[in-house]
Length: 262
Ligand code: ADP
Image (cartoon, rainbow, N blue to C red; front, side, top):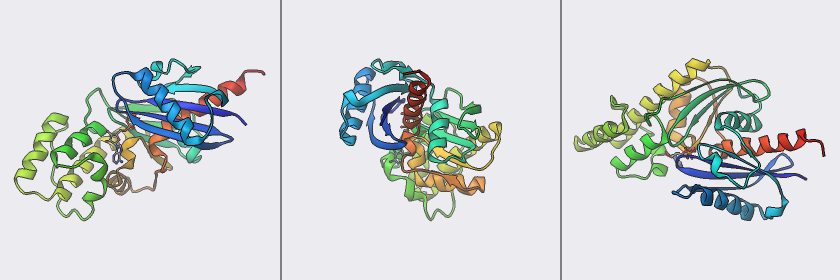
C-alpha cells in the first residue's frame, strides 16, 4: 500500500488529497492566509486526520497551484494545468477537455487518452469570469458565494452584465439591485457572462466530449447548469471537483515514485 499526498495552494484555498491504492482516502480544504507554508502544512495535517493515517506513512508529497513552492516539505512540484488534467482523467477516464475555474483564473485544457496535456488556454491576468468575480458579485447581492448556486433557478429575464471588470461588475450588480431586479435574473446574467468567456477559452483548445468542470466554481450549480445548457453537451462534475488539482498532484508523486527503481 502506497500513500501519497497532493497539496494544492491556490489563490483562495489550500486543498490536500491523500491517495492510497487508487482511492482518495482523505482530504482537506481551507482558506489560505498570508503564511502559505503554514497553510500547506495544515492542509496535509488535516487530510491525515481525515484519513486516520500518520505522517510517517506518506511516501511522497507533491505541491501544485500558484503557491506550490510553499510546499517546502514536499518532494515534487508540478503545475496545476498538468494536475487538473491528471486528476480529471483519474475521476473521468474518458475526459478530453477540462474547464478549471478557480479563485483567480480560468483554464481550458485539452487532454489525451492518458490524461496528459495536449493544449491549454488561460484567461488573462484580470479576475473577470473567475471565482473572485462571483465572490464579489454575491457580496453585492447580500449573499455568500456558497449560497448563490441554486438561486438562479427559475430566472425568467436574465439581465445583461456588460462589465467584465470585477469592480465595475460589482457596481453594475448593485445598480440592478437598486432598480429592484430579481436576484435570480441578476445571477442568471452573471452566470451567462462567465460561461460566455469560458466558452471562448474552450473553443481555443477545441471542444469535444467528455468535458469535465473542475475548481471551486464547479461547486456552483447555477454555473454548472448554465455551462451544460450553453455547451449542449453533458459536463462531468465530481463531488471532489475542488480537489482535482490536489488529486492530480498526488498521482504525479506516485508516478515519480514508481519511476525510481527501489
Ligand atoms: P484557488 O485554487 O484559486 O484557490 P478554488 O478552485 O478553490 O480556487 O476556487 C475558489 C472559488 O470557488 C471561490 O472564489 C468561489 O467562487 C468558488 N466556491 C468555493 N466554494 C463554493 C461553493 N460551496 N459554492 C459555490 N462556489 C464556491
